[in-house]
Image (cartoon, rainbow, N blue to C red; front, side):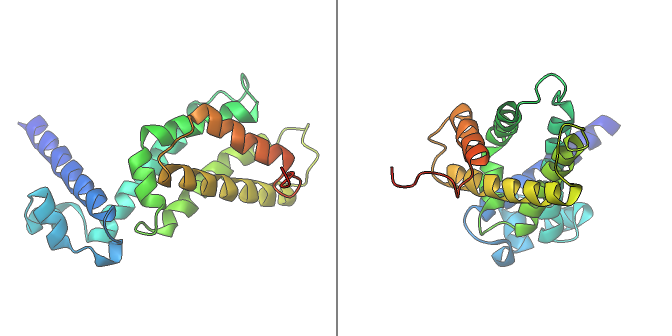
Length: 192
C-alpha cells in the first residue's frame, strides 16, 4: 500500500510539473495561477499545496531537478579519457537535447532567468575543476572569467538553437561552439 501512495505522489508531482511547463510555453510564470496549474493537471488545490508552496516553488523544483540531472551527467563524463572540449560540449548538448522542450521553455522569457544562472554555475564548477591541472597557464581569476564568458556565450547559442527548431545536430552545434571558442568571436572573419 505504501508503494501505491508513493506512485500516486510521483504521478501528482509529474502532472503538476507537466501542467506548469505547458502553461510556461504560453506565458510567463508571473501570469500563471495555482488555479490554472491545478485545472490543467486535473488536481485539486489542496493536493497542490501538499506538495508545493506556490507556482514559484514548483518551478524551482523543476529547475533543481534538471540541474541535478545536469550535474549527474557532468559527473559521469570521463574527463581523463576525453579531455577534448568538443567531446564535452557534444556530451552536454546530447543531455540538453534529451530535455530540449524543458530547456527551451526555461531559457525563454517565460521561464526564470535564475535557471540560466544555475546552469552556468553547474557548468563552471565542473569546468573549473579541470583548470586545477598544471598544464593550464592561466590564473584562477582569469580562468573563472573565461569560463563565465564561454559558458554564457554557449548558453546564448543553445537558446538560439532551441528557439529555431534545432536544425543543426548536436555534433554540428558542438563543432560550431568549439570553433567560436577556439577562434574567438572577435577574431572571426566576418567579411566572408
